[in-house]
Length: 311
Image 1: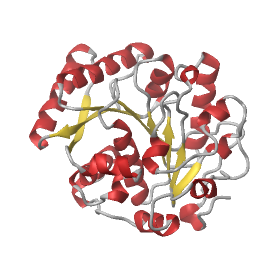
Image 2: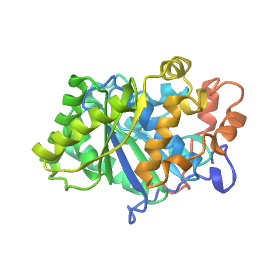
Image 3: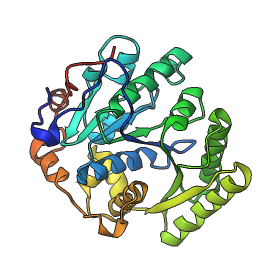
Image 4: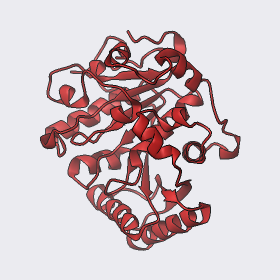
């Protein structure tokens, strides 16, 4: 059982057969890397957990994973171990705090970056099991448009495209949307976009409107603009410190903007989202003065996930 106790820290069960899915699923994509996609995905998951939502964060970049680094934890097992049959799904989750769990990916395993059909199906089935026992699953997709990445994007309730105002980044996000629509004939609902590294809110809004207009005209889908994250020195500082942005600088402009993005995705009033909820003090108390000082902190957080697990 995980180190967290009580209803807030209890781990979600993972049943041996996929039950009906209950959780909302948000897949976060960018086309190419380098736009802060993983920071946004982690921030969305943490913001939801702050609001009391039981949330699973999944690093689906199985070749160049980095969410464990952003969180400052070292996972003893990863999704790659489960997919290869070396571990149970439950053993691969790390409890980051009350209502928040991480399924890490694996770094440096190029052969895992593009799964074969059987393992893609296994991964989707595992996500369905997890989603039956939490309220939200946030999936940080890998870069590129491989079939595994597109399968997950197409199966999510919401697809969030993240891009900077740079034309190349907007082209990458548009290319991903186009590939996803062609791959799975995705319907016109559930698309969203957010801008990062913006000089100001107007630049972010203008760039997302360009992306949304291109998707409407050439892909045939409506994309909801859910916010922009300004350029903020707190973001690279949190990455260097290996502390999530919402912990490292919870009141920073970027952190506030990411909370707003999460609120809009959830259909909440972004203006009423608190700057800090009950999750972050609990995380600080649980993990000590420094976020995850050693590998032992990560090992202590491995979730049992109810004891009934998928193989």
